[in-house]
Amino acid sequence: MNNNLILYIASSQDGFISGESDDLSFLKLVEIEGEDYGYLKFINSVEAILVGRKTYDKVISMGFPYHENKNVYVISRDVKKGGRSYKYEQTIEWLQKAGLVNIAYNVSVPNLPLSAFSDISKFKLYLFDNGLLGAMLNISSSIIIDVKNTLFEQFNGAFVENFVASELVAYNDEKLFYWTSNSDAEVDFLIQRNNKVFPIEVKSGMSRNTKSLTSYTSKYTPELTYRVSPRNFHQSDKFINIPLYLVSYLR
Image 1 (spheres, rainbow, N blue to C red):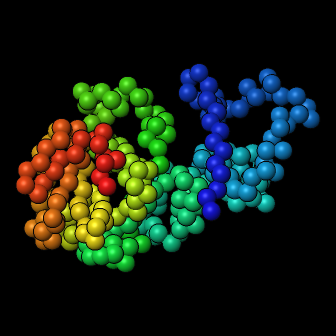
Image 2: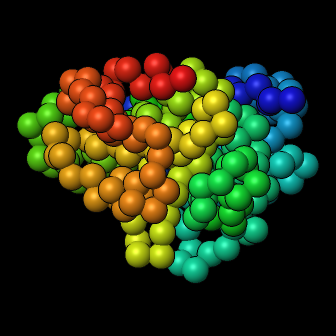
Image 3: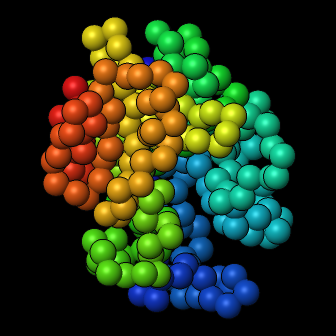
């Protein structure tokens, strides 16, 4: 059973919620003794709390325990180098059940069923919504849709891949898998249809390079191969280019 998610985002006009050096003295301007503004009632109604690392550290540094009677998940941008999946298993499971992330598991041999040949210790995480991903990264919508903006070009590939992942899950209730080989080739997604496996490579730009897809094809000779990109629909023999706006039709 999925959990209900309540999201609160506090922000000031300049995009920050504190002054320099995490100064919170401005809160005294609205502070009323004995008034909690409904916080106690709210906190008693929830079972778990997701909080950013900086906020959590700040509260702890002020000498306050952080809801010791609740399940608290601290979200950080940094994963310790050499970290193992089991260390983050409970947190990732909670995020998945809350509908916040989609997980793609690694497959080295694309046999049926894909779930039986996946390695659950190797996976990629995708945020369920690209709008929230942009907000978390402080990226405006105008930059996301500006194909001429070279500053966003390097990260755009990951952003488009996240979009494809969310579309596959939303429209097809898809379990996500990806393929890698020992020679560092990687196909972004594998889909299972009519007892067959089809590879999907995602491109954020107009490049025609399909090196990883070619490597996969030479080993497993799939009936069809897909590339998802900004290019228009095109089919050449067993190769099909799907425009980004038609990802939902990969059924």
